[in-house]
Image (cartoon, rainbow, N blue to C red; front, top):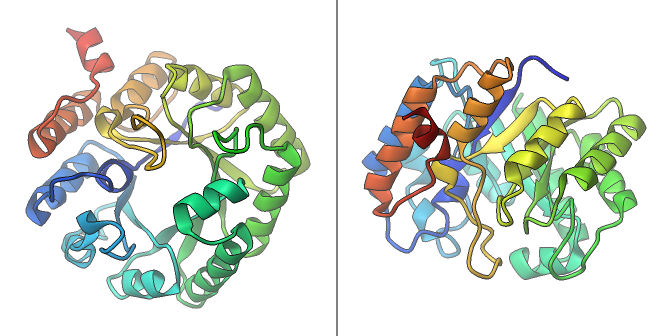
Length: 295
């Protein structure tokens, strides 16, 4: 089991993407700055998806332009295609996030194109990034199962991981998009992938829809995974999930890891404050298990 982990904060991206009310850009910038000050070293700050699809990101260029890229924090941008990638790189982004589903049905449902077309787009993005000394992080959605297709064969996830790695993606983040994973399956899948693809760095991104998010994180930790996505207050959603979904709260991960002696570098009080700030900005209550446990 690893003694140190990296937590990737996805709240400013995944947490805000489906918001019905536009959040002013200065509020977003303040939230991202506070998350950085809490000790989070990797933050997915925004998306360069077209504002027609996600109106919340109409200000993505303003957000990236305002960030301090010399603060010790890596600010990532999600890019859906070549155009989005070029826009992101114009504002100094040094790492981008790309996305593809291991479920053909889910990929078409969310991106309106077959998986093969998305992989071709990722190939273009990866090529641009290589030419500009920018890193590409890939996320494989439905890596633990899909509400449309059911079980996704591990061979499909393995093949997709290898393909993305060969395209130049330095890290593959396996996403439990619909919250169907359980600890036994997590260990089985991660154990298999690490044995078969030992040269690839894997991260995980769990949605806590059925209350097994933290248990799944622990199972991944036991398989020596060292990169975990999370969102302050659990804010986040799979757009196609009935009733929405939750990411794992960043503060819950920090609390669990630090209690176990696993170093995160994140200040629990400061990251909990970020959840309070997010509640004010968004206008609704978020999840605060770790903060309540401290009282």
